[in-house]
Image 1: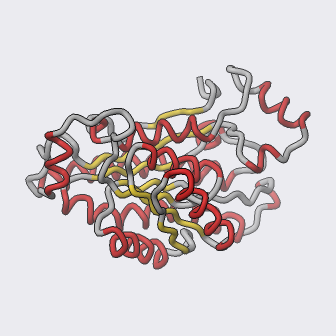
Image 2: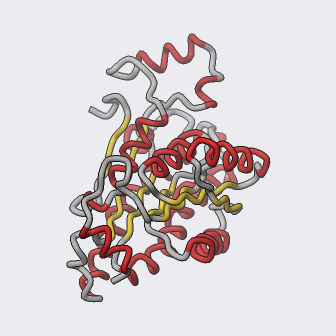
Length: 276
């Protein structure tokens, strides 16, 4: 057992220190919901690594803002989640940089919206590659390390659209719905591999895999919409408002905590009641 893991089991952890000593990697972590997740994990004591694809200037700005607000640095890692090789490389980079990986948040996602009749092969394949295959390859690489150490958390960020569907989003809905089956299978396999390795009783922490499904969240993209469009969206939400990125982030850091070791293979809705 890693000495740090033993320390975390023996010492009561106060609020704000639930993730002390843990290393978290958040894909798509430099903006929107991903950035909120990074800050939330950091406030609980985690060391943060954030993934990004193209916008290096934004990633550097995030890193500067994060260090200014938290007093601790965040490492940033460039890669295309739609590439299996990049997924494996960035996981290896995080391990090389921080020496361990305790929490993986598969948050990166894209949309390429069209009606089914007009959707191209590229529209379909690109969205599935990033939103679903990327989560698989990231999890595959992280899981080997987590099972070897006997502890770890994987949290996938899906969407209420994966539960409800939406006009013009067949590719996005399919990719986000696919995360439900992936989550449940990874959760079962993680438990199986831990038991086979004789590590299933490692302080009750274990390796868990769960999914969070945000609804309509007030990100930069939504903020730029006309007020009438936002009002129409809010009219579809039972609680009558958009969600804040921090409301998603709080659920992620709850699931990432050691004390959440009895929660695995579950889908957590953060959507104002849209899927009731």
